[in-house]
Figure (spheres, rainbow, N blue to C red):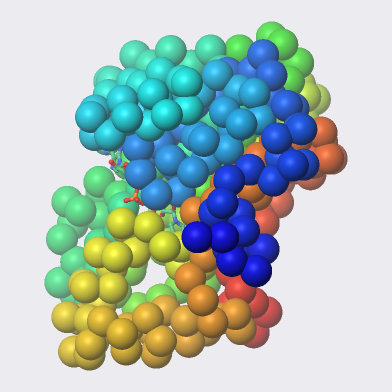
Length: 268
Ligand SMILES: NC(=O)c1ccc[n+]([C@@H]2O[C@H](COP(=O)([O-])OP(=O)(O)OC[C@H]3O[C@@H](n4cnc5c(N)ncnc54)[C@H](O)[C@@H]3O)[C@@H](O)[C@H]2O)c1
């Protein structure tokens, strides 16, 4: 249902401005983790802007559904499999590094294999994808790399050692890409949201309720929204709009930055 607030009306479909802006017509965009949550919203938003979108996700069925919805193509791939990552067609103009997952556990109990997998998926794979895509972007003198980071790319929280480490590393990688890509018409930026209403967060609410020994409602109110000034979850479409803006002509001079969509969390 359409509401009165901007984030509510955004759920009703594309704004007139968004429908008019076909900034990405003729461009090819790869969105990792595009089958769900933020990636799904990004795939839809970039398609709305005219891009041919490739949805890369390990969930083949969901990736296929999203690709069908947005008129794009699906690639079923486990992005922790580096050989499979290296085999992807990376002749793209826009690369959105979005795939990720969370694991919540105290450091002294954190499973080392999960730590390694999170770093592979959320740091090493983005590195390999950028590495493979940049020569194509350089050849055309234009490219947009958008890394879906997090407020946890700027701030730490207990029990999230791998995720916080990975997002801080992704922020660093993004800045190096910005410095190297600038001369070739390539920008690289991060979007850093606080909690977004997605399946990943719904899973975290349950996990944190167990870790903190409190109810799920208390997790949202007392843990997730406590550090933010804006007391609501962010919608995936808001993050997608930010990604699309970073790919638009309006953001041509924006590179090496991290757009904090964190409801004021890092203003503290
Ligand atoms: N939801 C939030 O509150 C929030 C906040 C800040 C940042 N983020 C970041 O946004 C990104 C997307 O998160 P989301 O909330 O939309 O999650 P989600 O769980 O809804 O979607 C993640 C997608 O990534 C895919 N994926 C996971 N592991 C994969 C793998 N090994 N290979 C291929 N695909 C894989 C999943 O299948 C899923 O489709 C993540 O990087 C996350 O860290 C999320």
